[in-house]
Length: 391
Ligand SMILES: C[S@@+](CC[C@H](N)C(=O)[O-])C[C@H]1O[C@@H](n2cnc3c(N)ncnc32)[C@H](O)[C@@H]1O
Image (cartoon, rainbow, N blue to C red):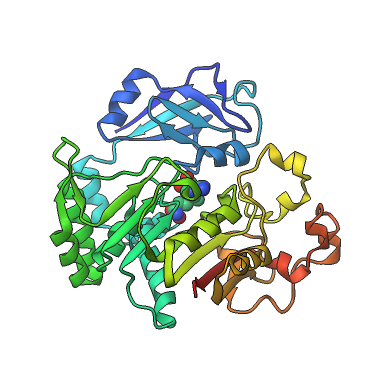
């Protein structure tokens, strides 16, 4: 079933490129029943869907989010959604139709395509449940580090998929932290599906997830996983988290924190001696990955209006970890492949900084202080993955 429900003007400005529209009642009922809502501009579906509201404000270009009774939307060309004369509609797609599901499930090419797409999204089952554990632990294993006993993830996102995967791997205590609300219980069928997925890659982990599934105290008959603790709706640096950890980690989070020093100091406090931090930090301007350093052209005052990332460069992070008492164990740098612009497919990863920086003097001269005086190699680094030890 595909139904198009017009979104009525006037939209309320939500800052930057974002506008908010009320979702008509009939569409709300369909969404509550499990349908998916997509935004169309003049009949063409835009996206990305489920975008962070900060991203919609800063980047626009069709990013949207269906959020309770409202939808946050943006135009595809930075124009004002109230004044550009285009029609905006919410397309209601019933992906739950048994016939459609059956047809999709039989098409291996579509399944593979969907798995690949799912991997591109934050807080998704392929990226977070399967991918993050794999990437983090393979890096730890290269340094002889075993599965941690107690782990903490900053900026988990809405569904603590990474936590569930680490608990399935045998972690005893996992604290999931975010400034957003984090889910803490699920229908039993959802956990059974995740365990079934794990059976395909690691049967012990699948068994462990089933064995650790317990009734949740949510009064709704849902289940949760033993060992999972949620520290949500609070920035990590202020969260009331007790006890110690042997691993604190994050993916695509540290570039967003507003108080980097307090964050790294708090990690140091919470870690046991000999414990590790592992962080994958995306150093690009998130407004448009094809112009990954554009935000360095903005003065502090100009940037204050956007401020979705903290603009720290790779050397700033490495210095900060050392200043706060960490030893750097390993680092991986991401930079541009020849002829690349800045999207994920254009990045290459290496354990040494790029031998030939792609940032030249002409580009550097367009940056504001302090970036204009930074080393071109440092500026050429668009991503940093760092493993540090607390002595
Ligand atoms: C780009 S998302 C990444 C989410 C998840 N790690 C992933 O890769 O799917 C960044 C997340 O960091 C969270 N965040 C930002 N600042 C934070 C802070 N100071 N403490 C905890 N979480 C924070 C945001 O709410 C958001 O969920």
